[in-house]
Image 1: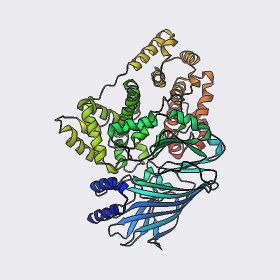
Image 2: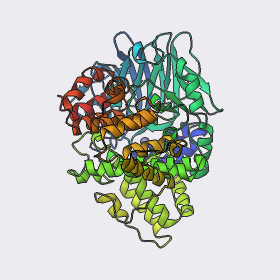
Image 3: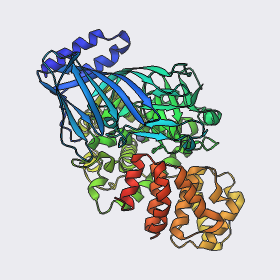
Length: 619
Ligand SMILES: [Zn+2]
């Protein structure tokens, strides 16, 4: 280990002053890499430190091909192991000379270890490769699947372990690298990455990228399309297709304010630029926190900024996740629980306590639903997971998010907000540009918050036991209590005073619809739909929960079945899609679901399709 340490110090000297702070952090935090079950890499022997990617993006063959050149640090090893899945490896060199390589046995979730022969003095390896049709990270969209319908589109999704399906790489969250890239795309398209980005299209279709802050492989990202940029402030802005650009710009116009609020809470934004690209609707997540350039679903463009907590969430990841990264996927709650907590604090700073508490309460209900759904597998309701032998994607349910949030909120109430904030600020600073695991977090928490203030807290129960401990914070919202009252009155009297609902936010509508009892009648749903136009709501979150209730309760009015099928054929956001397919399953309408899925599946990213396949029992 000593040798690795010395090499690291040398590499610091070669970096520009800009990175000094980060490198010092790295040095302080550098330690032996932990055993990890989701990567074949053995970084304690030989590890990559920098990637220079030179690729061509071919929209006709749906192939990315080129060369990945790595700077490496070698502790006397005669081989370096990378992760690779569904890649064609053509050629490998070390220090510029041909070298031997071997692709090992294929594992369904991990892919294959790519072992490259190196020598003691090897500083660089280069791998010439191409992607294949089975790649799981890439989604190639036809023009028809985009907003403008004029040009094709491509985006990548790396988390959790998919980057290895488009770049051979040491694909562990513990291994951080800087990168440069040269990306060649068709002339009429523009490429952007999780890096310093172009703001305009250029004439030759060749784009250069630089990412000077070290990041784990799952945060390397690429999008290619006929997109344009519009700035919000000097360091924030949006990318979108032409027909979406102004809408997106308007919706996210508070982005700079969000960055300022976040910095006031937990310290400087360390990534220079914070932009968001709104992708076509098949993007499988709400958002993905690719550094400098968050990827987002268009389903949050509601026209009234009501769903922009998503941007606060992805921004919060600039600290929790991107700056301080979970060491293994078993520690995923360190990324997500902290991010939800931070997101809700940003929303509170911008829009007040009421809105923040509504968000927190929606999460609380999600948590109850998830606990119910996982009652046969209580181990999956622990914060610290054991995902050995499983695809980490399996463990990524809402426990990490919502139970993680509740843990931190409970801790805040016990400690007081000032202590909590000082603690979190120091935690982010201490671990910046590094990784941490659950055990290190507990030690840090004890030393810097609990012991210091002489407080006992059931941390271990929260983290290592299933379910929710009894001391969980109680979250209340007057607005939601009123919504519940209005719903109860309606159920009793079949009458609803429209004036009471006039100023409801979409969150209040979501709460109203989600809380329908199982015996709500079809006539009552018809009445609500006729009065409030719920089937045709322009807010995707409201329509999603309304469709769910329609499926569960056998409501077929106002053409809702056609609307549901259309929605599932357009939107690929996994949360929405799986909520609706699981409603079909609960309502024993699985044949209908399969019929819709026949055409919808082609629009989904593999992340969404794999989950639905499993849900519907499709091989
Ligand atoms: Zn997140």
